[in-house]
Amino acid sequence: MQKPFFVVIFLFLSMILKAQQPVELEGKILADSLEYTFINIINISSHRGTTNDPDGHFVVKVKENDTLQFSSVQYQKKEIVITKAILNAKFLEVFLLPGVNQLDEVYLFDSKLIGNLEKDFTKIDFYDKYQLNAPQLKQDIPSLIDRKLAATGGDPSNLLLNTIAGERQKVKKIKANMVYDDRVEKSLELIRPENIIKMGIQEDELMLFIYFSAEDELFNLYVDQESKGLLFEFFQHKVVSWKKRKGQ
Image (cartoon, rainbow, N blue to C red; front, side, top):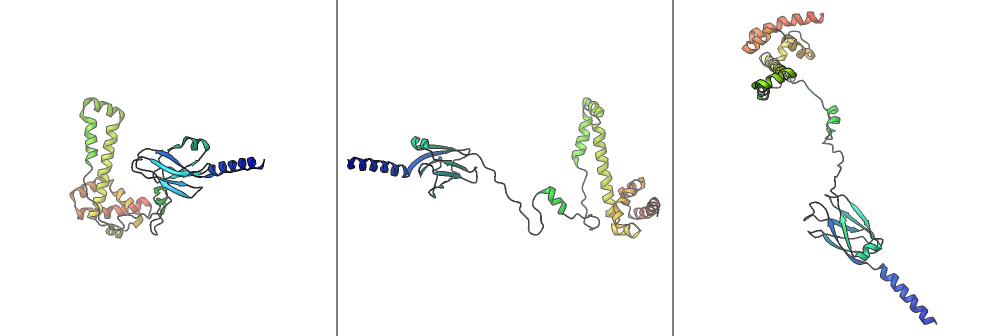
């Protein structure tokens, strides 16, 4: 009577031990642009790992309830728990999605800049190029404005439509402002900022004074003719008007 009992116990224990033995599980990884990309395949439960071949196939030893982890720089990390159904199927297909790695803020040396323009602009010191006596760029008005101005008036139908919409007037105003700013810069090349400051203009009001002076037609004439002497005398007279306007 005892012999059949021990046989049953032996068979039962054998089944349990067999169920706990690792088996080789074949599988394939499916993902965009996977060719020649190798995925880290880790059995977290047994602390063993492998990888796939160029076509995405892999073989890994697993037991029921083991957890497989699939990870790569290019794809999102994925974990799969091995079930009895997976073991019975003897094959596992794994779908991986493209991954986006969120990088931490990176500080550049001691500048405290992090690459976020909205935050960085609050930490940057700005300087007036005229106060630094930096050389000023001489350049013609961009031809794009001239081309756009011509385009709004080339075809009669376009001229009518653009005139109604105010487009041509808007472009003309943009070009006029560019000419205006160009003359202002040129005037400071002809008469250095420090010489104008010596006339009695506050350093922080220099540009306001120049734009105030530029409203006079003589300003345009002297700047276009590059008449340094006349422009110098012109600024001297304008200083008087400027101070009167300020009530000094």
